[in-house]
Amino acid sequence: MSLQKRNQQRLAWLCQTDRRLIDGLRVAVSIFESERLSFGQGTADAHEDAAWLLLCSLDLPRDRLDDYHDSLIPASEWRVLSRLIRKRVDQRLPVSYLTGEAWLAGLRFRSDQRGLIPRSLLVEALSFCLNEALIDPPSTVLDLCTGSGSILIHAGHHFPNAALFGSDLSPEALELAKLNLDDHGMSARATLKQGAGLEPWSGMQFDLMLCNPPYVSDSRMQTLPAEFRAEPSAALDGGRDGMDFCRPFLFQAQARLHEQGQVLLEIGHEASHFDAAFPKLEKTWIPVHAGETMVALISRKALMRLA
Image (cartoon, rainbow, N blue to C red):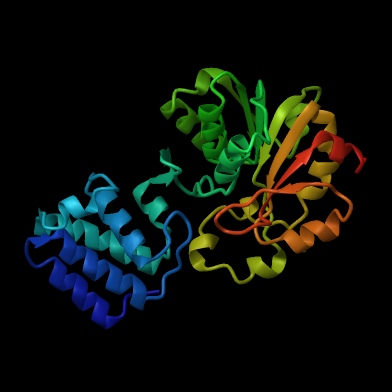
């Protein structure tokens, strides 16, 4: 895709001379809205998206936009920023991939196309479970489909005495997770393994399993915006009904859990498919801002009834 003529003119104007940050923000927001970009990968709308792109690229704090509204940005900087704005439109790349970073629940993570952009509902659900005493502090935490490692790292902050374990089918994603664990000082207490599902953890048991699996159904995959298609498809595509990963995982999980162990599982908008695949499975739905039936807490006892 290429910029509309009007938006090309807006960018040309922006680069003519030194201009305030707020001027560039208005231009970027106007362009993002008129070009019908998609959001939801760490930003909610065109304003958040544009502010993140500009502030991060200028090495300014993301939460202090108002403090820098009237800061004068040199024309040379605007020329660099205009190329990023154009790339956001032309290639439909998410802003996290353009800036190389993502934020989730107050923590910063490296982000690139080796892994999904951190945005999992599991982090919010985990906080809810702790506040409601639905989960006891675990000694061992396993994060399946760990991707960038953001969920595992949040668990590490919640449970400072827990040993951390993470696995992913993608060796490239694990490279990214290792970098993020290093950044957060958790490498010494974390073990990463490459492999499908629970295969890397034969003979081991855990107190808590966290899993944000590929759960997007075939029909939803076909309608994903270009920004989401820029992410690794293997981390999103859950097959015909979105349950290709969940079926074997939940039937096998009880053997990898300690007696009081639990699984915290994200299934997004696929609750109807989940219930159809596991009609008799007892679970507790954990409410998150995006919905009431997107994250399930499942006990080992409930999983044993599936076997």
